[in-house]
Image (tube, rainbow, N blue to C red; front, side):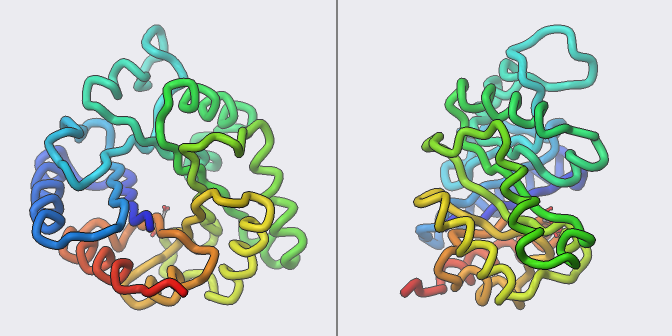
Length: 239
Ligand code: PGA
């Protein structure tokens, strides 16, 4: 079970350090089978090996080792911190940062070459959702163009765009339908749900048979709340 915190553009270097220390202390005392990942801002990276129970990840990177790419961060900078986990394809980067499927596939291939763990994000906009389930799946499958689904360090986060940061999660039955359909073609790839996950809805979402975790934004920003989310995930008994 993966429980992942996506900080987006939140927290400072100081508050990230406090957060990670508190979370690691909590996990020291609370033994969990959950795979706990935190994706802070790049300016808040700390050495990943300081936190034995947490996998530190990057929300973004540019697919180069180093070189001429103003404002970006490459593999050399990530490796300085021991960061080996990345998010790729988040809808905020697809939309606001205009990352195309072609560029996303290039980032994916680069991450694979580097042997990084990838959470690959997919999700449909509201107008596609309004056109029904078949359209949703067609849209989602399109987001696999150029993506090698046989990569063994791949997890997929299904995050309906209209549910992200809105406080309105998708309905559990709709999440189930999408995840079951993805699972039928993607075999053993861990599937996460993301989009307004919180302490009220997490349990029912991760109890779904095709759900292997959650990618959490807003509700992860407070460390005590994130610890509660980990406890909820831990308590869910899979059939
Ligand atoms: P949210 O964000 O939990 O704030 O909806 C999730 C995400 O974008 O990964």
